[in-house]
Image: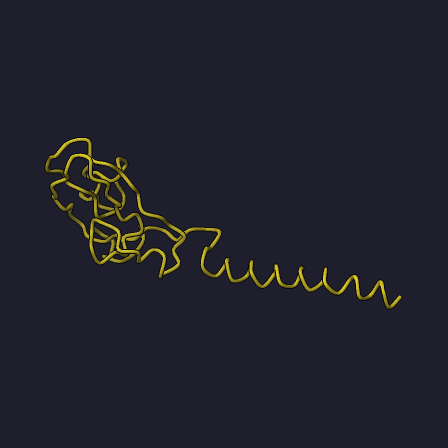
Length: 124
């Protein structure tokens, strides 16, 4: 029985260790992502440079709107930025209300009553 008990202890320890790791991961990477919040109620016009890769803020919490500053990670939103590459150099309006149906580009959704009534920093 002593030998069997010794064999079971490491397995139980590994199981317990796995639980500790998964609870740590759950804290940093929630299963259900947070909702995006309204960063601003108007788009931001920017010049995109052909061939350059950009990371558009999806969560709405970035202080460098419309681009990502990593806030989604530090605030544990479970969201990730939208990475895209500009096909040509041109001025575009990038969405900051985070309700566009054509991310990262503004589609005019910010003009809707739903967005205009929402508080900046709150989810829609």
